[in-house]
Amino acid sequence: MASESGLILGIETSCDETAAAVVRRGREILSNTVASQIAVHLPYGGVVPELASREHLRNILPVVRESLRAAGVGYEEIDAVAVTEGPGLAGALLVGISFAKSLAMALGKPLIAVNHLEGHIHAVLLEEARRAAELDGDAPEGPLPGRPALALVVSGGHTHLYLAEFAKEQGTWTYRNVGRTVDDAAGEAFDKVAKLLGLGYPGGPWIDALAPHGNPEAMPFTFSQIKAKVHRKDKPGALNPAEEVYFSFSGIKTAMLRYTKVYEMGASIEARRAALAGMENAGPADALPLCDKRTLDLIASFQRSVVDDLRRKTFRAAERFGAERVIVSGGVAANRELRVRFTAEAAERHVPIAFPSMALSTDNAAMIAAAAWPKFVMGDFAEEGLTAEPGLALGRR
Ligand code: KG4
Ligand code: ZN
Image (cartoon, rainbow, N blue to C red; front, side, top):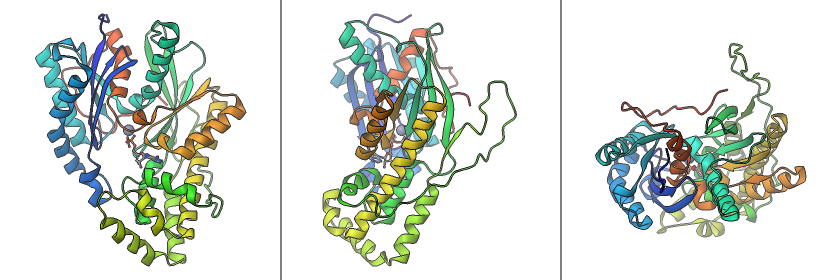
């Protein structure tokens, strides 16, 4: 049973952010501490798993200590420790899990395992629950009853669509996976295209900042219709593969590479890469004067194509599955053009839409602590043998 305070310490180490947060009853963030490893991975243009694990090990204790300090909470006041079980990098996950397990044991408090993807969805639900509590002065433990929400989780590692529903009787959230990428994740495409064009890492924020300076209609890249490649046995209630939504982002990456070759952009890309590498803390504003019109048009067209593909497929799925509203979460949900174009389509269709605040869009531990709350209430605690699950899936198909 939930105690009065309902304080959950969340810990997240699935990729390249070491994060800890204290959240009360799944809706009130007392602290949200994130130590980013961007500087460590920057020279490699992507996350180096081995370095990520070491950085987590270096950062985990100061990050947890800081999150408790910022929350004004002592270790003994925590009601449970929640940790990301997967998906993610095995070595990175193991650091958070070992730490959380030991801490929970030492404090004599329960340990709760959270799926990172469920965490991203709860980044939105957390803020909705907080707003509802502010309006009502009371605490709804779940959303309004009704049809499920369609959640697009779009990040550096994932492009998934889920139908998310709160089962009041069981007190739990249930998920049904109705869409996924067959190759790269959308955020991965942002990162790889930014790298290809000699921009910084991670690429999403760079492309986001430079795209408004180009013409998004200059080069319309098209996404072909992707056929279902997987044939599942007919299980009762299983999703018909024809209904499942497929994304693919490796084709646009290749098209971009081809474009830079055809228009012989190699030398200017290398010059830009070298100029930015020579600057301390280079940001998108430094890249702007180093980009010609063709490059800016290419960046704007890439972003428009990816955003529109995500938008079209998400709203089509929302209609097909009778979703009551749309939730967009994960690192790419921080993209400004994505927010504008999804919001416009939602308004046109009269479908409510929600995004997390910017701070909760990318990886953080507040979303892990929030996702753990219904599990805490139901006494759904982790087994002693809990280990990292790098390929952990969310929900049934
Ligand atoms: O959720 P997240 O922090 O980590 C994963 O679980 O992957 O997402 C990181 C991803 C990276 O690929 C990054 O380039 C992308 O989110 N991203 C963005 C933006 N901010 C971060 N992509 C597009 N526009 C942005 N503003
Ligand atoms: Zn994530």
